[in-house]
Each structure stands twice: as C-alpha cells, then as structure tokens.
Length: 114
Length: 114
Image (cartoon, rainbow over all chains, first blue to last red; front, side, top):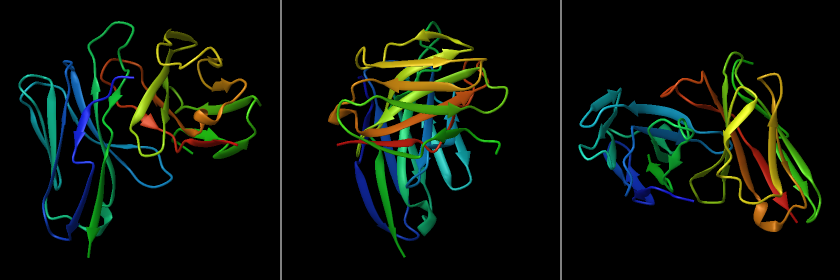
C-alpha cells in the first residue's frame, strides 16, 4: 500500500544532541501526525498538526506541517535516553469513506547513547 | 483498563490454520481501525469501522482476511488459511469517531505463521 517517505531510517546520537526527521508524500494530507513506538507497544501520539504551515511544540518536541501539505518534520531537542524508540509520521486524508485512515511512514529508529 | 486492549498478545500457528484476533476499543469510541505492521515497516491500514459497519475495507490484502464488529464495541479480525507472509504485528486503534480525532492504539497481537 501507499507509504510516506520517511528519513532517516535510523539515527545514532549522543545524549544531549538534537534530532531531526522528516516525511514527504506525493499526496496532500489534511492532517499530519507524529507517533512514537516503544518495543512491544502500540504507537503513541506525540504531536498532531492540522493546518498547512502550522508549527507546534510539545516539550522538547517541535513539528511543522509543510505549506504544500505534502511534508512534515519533527525535531527533538536535547535528547535523553528515554527518547529511544521508533518514530513514525502519519498522514490523514480529507473526508469521505477514507476519513480517519492513516498512511504511515516507514519509521525512524532512534538510538541515544548516554 | 481504560486503553485499547488486544488478545492474544502473541499467537503462533501453523500454515493453513485459521486465526482470530480480538480488539476491545476504549469505551465510547465509535471508530475502530485495524493496521498491520511487518518487521521493520510502518503500519499498513487494513479496515475501518464506524459503529458496526465498515465503510472502508480497502486495505484487506486478500479474501482470506475478514473483520467484524458487534455491538459497536469488540472487533474480531479473522485470517483464514494462514500463510507465512501473514506473520506480522496486528494493531487495533480506536477514536471517538469524528474527523481528526486522535487514534489510540492497542499493544498489538504478534502473529507468527510457521
């Protein structure tokens, strides 16, 4: 099925460093979402973006909804060991029968060295 | 608990056997989604329920896959005549049902077909 192009696939960083990851799509989305998944768990929502150009922060996390509606990025500042996990972007289309249906990126595996 | 629950947490089966996976959504959530996550991949949409009806079944990979929801609550995903390529984590999510409502994910069922 359709997937978003998410990069990088993996990152190995030192504690305290900043992290940036992004997603691009050939399709326009109405909503962009960023999730984090820990081992053995389901994804947990970090940030939701609803308007083109919107910049939203949640603690050390900052995400932006691209002007073209086809891309988004997530920044994590001052990383800590508990930031380890897999980060997914997800796009949600406009209404109709597919409303609510999420299209996910392939994920970015983040490793933080103490 | 208050979250989405899924059972079983793990399932090992032999090729050709049928399996049933269960999802208990958050109480009051009218929308329910099934996703599949293959090893090292993002989540792939399977089916969406609004109440007991499924307006979007577009993600079901073959006619061996089916799902139902009864009483606007519990949902069962059935895979008939399982194949090795069906091995994956099957995730369920629920939301209040209105557009742009947050989807809350369960921990998933890890299916291994031998």
